[in-house]
Amino acid sequence: MSSSTRPHRLKSAGLVLTLLTLAACGAPSRAIAPSSDPGGGANAIDAAASIRPITAIAGRLLEPLALAGLTSAPSQIITLESGEVRIEQRLLDSTGLELLSVESTSSGDLRSISRSNVPLGGAVISNTALVSRAILHLASLTLPLGSGTPLVSAAGDRRIVSWGRTVNGVAVPGDGTSVALSVSGALVGIAIDEAPLAPAPARITTAAAAKSAAMLLVPSGAALSGTPKLGWVAPAIGAGDEEDLSAPRELAWRFRGTLADGTPFELHLAAGNLEMLGWDWAR
Image (tube, rainbow, N blue to C red; front, side):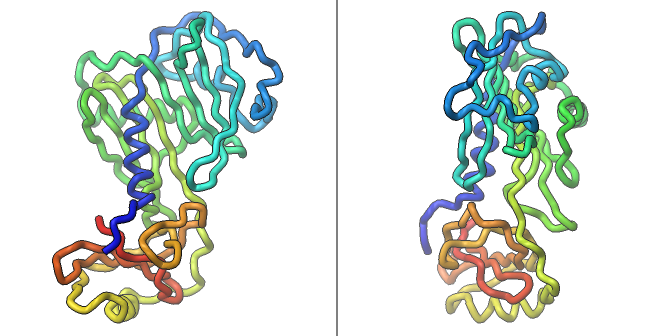
């Protein structure tokens, strides 16, 4: 059983950890000064018409930033492990401290918003109120909700409201929308993950046929458990246990099971032709 890292699990954990490390700002005042570097440097794309300026985003937050004296730093191009290119914008105070950071795709879709120095105390509101507050924050920035019923989890003095992503009723593991809030509902951060998907197969094999194929692939003494489920998964490199995050997600039958020694594993078979997309991914 390989002990290599599981990138899409780390992606989800990293998303939450990123949100948890955010702290926030104070209250609003006046206009934000433009960047002192109009050119923005070699990696800047401040002039990109599709990218919402960070100043406009700051002005639409339900609990706005203290805007007086802030400057927008030159935009930067960053590349994620998956190969996705994002444009990062930052707001700085007079000392150069970052107060707000925003990441967008090259097509202009917001993917991440991080606030610093947010007061995390205050009156604790209910989970229902937290979900309502998260929806209001997303709506104020015209950001889409995830799919299904949101989950609310506690992480110290922060609360994370998360929606998973589904496409045509099938889950896309690791993708979705997460909103980090203080216990009183103040916005700390937002993260949205939407991996590209490969075209769905014209014909999807039955669960029974997929299980028969899976039984031929598992080692002697291994046992499958539960009912197989469809999911959009990242194909593995060489059908092993390291996912190729740069490749589009493929529709697959997902099987869970245990080896003879009790070690858990997951097996992914392509939903169309039952080709093995990857396995040995312990959960």
